[in-house]
Length: 158
Image (cartoon, rainbow, N blue to C red):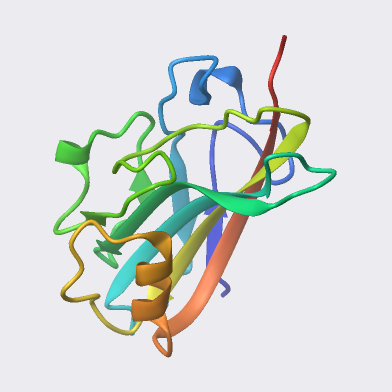
């Protein structure tokens, strides 16, 4: 069975409600997953936007959230999860606001796509202290068993 990633806040390809964005409460949406392989030692979650700053002329991938070393038995992150409530020894990486934690959609122009990517790894990621997305991805190299993706979109209201 393939690993799947879903949210009760939005469907794959659907619109992300304002509550989870800079125009709302800027809280993380509920995320749930299933189909984690038995040999998984940890999970990584990366949320990013490849359409920054303008979907018609993207120049960078904007990082919204980086979590690593989620325990493999974890099956959900509740809505508005705080750093203190992250499961087990989950670590947080630095987003593109240069801080840890979730930063919701806040596109300057146009409708952007937000990819929530969950990776099952055959190892724990060691020696990372508030890493960037690139540092987490480098540490993951050769250790990804499988991945699941949930994509939502957001267009800032005027």
